[in-house]
Length: 247
Image 1 (cartoon, rainbow, N blue to C red):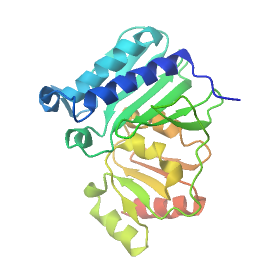
Image 2 (cartoon, helix red, strand yellow):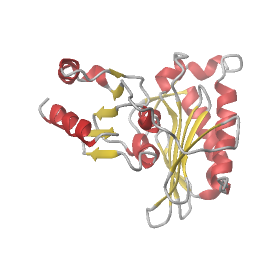
Image 3 (cartoon, rainbow, N blue to C red):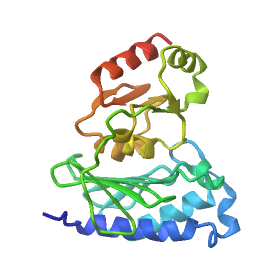
Image 4 (tube, rainbow, N blue to C red):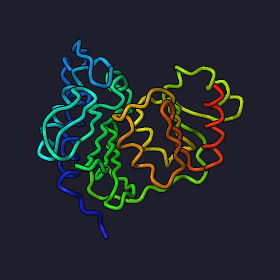
C-alpha cells in the first residue's frame, strides 16, 4: 500500500521544496551568504541562509506546535515540540558543496517522537519514518516512497568531525576503516544504511540527532554523551566503540 503523507509531512516537504528553490545557485540572494552576527541556540554563528530557511519552516509548521530550533531556540506555543536544524551542513551550503539539508522531528506532548524527516536539499533525497517508525526514502520531485535497501558490501563509513580527532583517525586508518567526513550530521545519519558505519565524536546536540537517529531503526546504535556510533554490523560497532574509548 502506498504511504500516505500526514498533513505535517506535507507541510514540511512543501517547505523543503521552497528552501531548495531559494538555495539553488541561480536564485540565492548574495545577502544570504553573509553571517548575521547572531549566535544561534546551537552555539554557532548563524548565516542569512540559516535564518531564511528557519523562517520558511516556521511559517509552514507553526500550526503543528512550538519550536526548538538550532537557530532561534524556543519559539511559539503548542502541545507538540518541533525540533529543527534548519540548515544541516551550513558551511557546505555556503561553500556550494552539495551535502546540506534540513532536519525536522516532531514530539507529542508526552515527548514521544511522532514524525521525523531529513532532506538533502542538494539532490532532493528525502528520508522519513512511517507511523510504525520504519524508515522510508523518497525525493522532493516525487511523492513515492520506498524502503531503503543497503548495498551488500559498503566500503566507506562517515566520520563527522574527524578533523577534531586525529588520534582516532590514525587508528581507523591503521585498522582499515575507510571513511569520509562530509560535514552534516543529520544527513550522514539518514544515509547510515548505505555506508559501513557513521561515527560522531563531540558534544551531543539534540538538533543534530532528533530526526537522524529515528531513521536508523534496525541498525546497531551506540549513543553516549560524547559520541554516537551507527553500524549495520554489531561487530563493526563494537570495534569502533573500543577505538573511541581508547582515544
